[in-house]
Image (cartoon, rainbow, N blue to C red; front, side, top):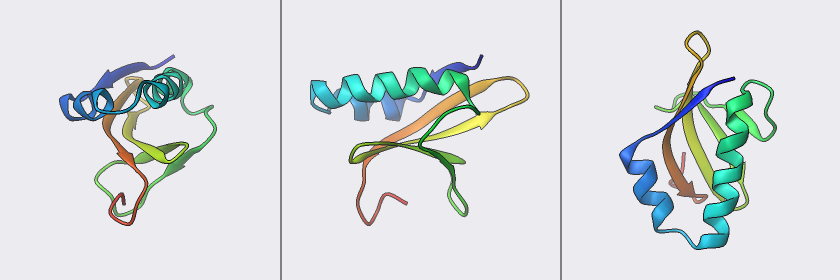
Length: 84
């Protein structure tokens, strides 16, 4: 089981989202406690965050430290040409 930590930036981004999307993102983040056994997760290359999780039109960008079991949520962004 992993511990989930939110960056200040990610919390600010989530607060601005509609409530329906916010609930979906919170459910997806809760599922990240089970890393690496999560669906919709992809390792990123040449990006400052190591992984991303898809939630509809939004992406949760995060890092995962498998040794100390910490998932660090860095950003939550709407998918567009500037997301990656």
